[in-house]
Length: 421
Image (cartoon, rainbow, N blue to C red; front, side, top):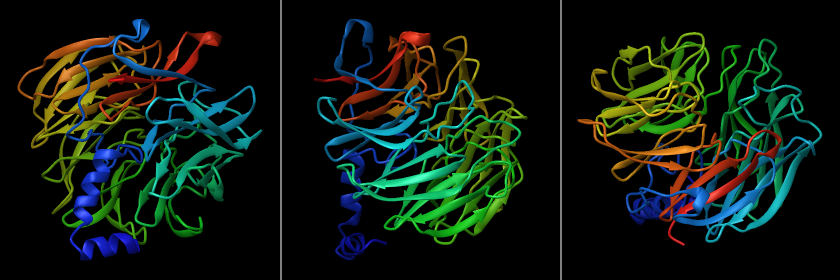
């Protein structure tokens, strides 16, 4: 534990600081509580229209293209982008209150991967922030590199985490780094010798530990939560759901289930049931026990491939690749309801804001659905550009949407804030 947090813990103030921090910032992929739930006090409009600027607080054109979700910390917004014509991968800094683009820091130049999947980008992992530094991961020069920056853009360190040169499929990279105490945890899984889960010292970038993973191309971001009173890194893929000790990378338990390639991040409920969905080569959604015997509790054939699931009390919601929204009871997998929202095409993960779920399709429509397991209730459909791949973020009574307007060579990316001005 960091010294300041240790002192606050001794004084009994750490929970208060943590709660306040969770309400104020969105420091990494899936947010401060790692579950893609907005803070309880966040209020968003149900309806808006980007094309008419209805309920649009601000709109900022951003250079290049990326699928990374923004992080929102202190007075700033950070996100990554790549400009293929310039062969650059960069970090962008925007003003939190009005969205002004304040700075762009080029991290890599001239080393973009030769090939990636057409639905991927050269800037897909989301940044992370530990209260002092911004950490970004890029697939570049046939390797995974992590760079630590001050909020003012000064490079503190840059480290090659591992070689990353997949042979069977050149689909690119997508796993976001996450912060746990003084560690930056990075997954780099592919069909090569360096495939593994890594932990770097956040102060120096030095490797603290490495856990070997199967030689298997996987895209999932690791996530950390507390199960049975113990912090655990959760990661799915290579036909397993696994838990690791963040302190040393040792495997705590695993269940032989799921499929080879997973893109989504694991989710869990209050009863420590763990769920994930994927689709290559086997499609499905799987639930295992995160405590006790660690066995498979239920599964079904529904595929939510790139997008993560979303938990609500005693239930889990999945936006399937075919555009059908499902709600299952986590106890036994009972289907509570299903309803088609659109014709298919989704990359962004659903987000819980109060008693509503916000779901963005690749076609640029954001659907607002009541978070009610006993019935399906579509509240609104909101045009929000022409293409959305990044998961929106709800903070400061605003919904931050990274969206593309236009198609083909005319497509331009924007970060748009929906809500109060």
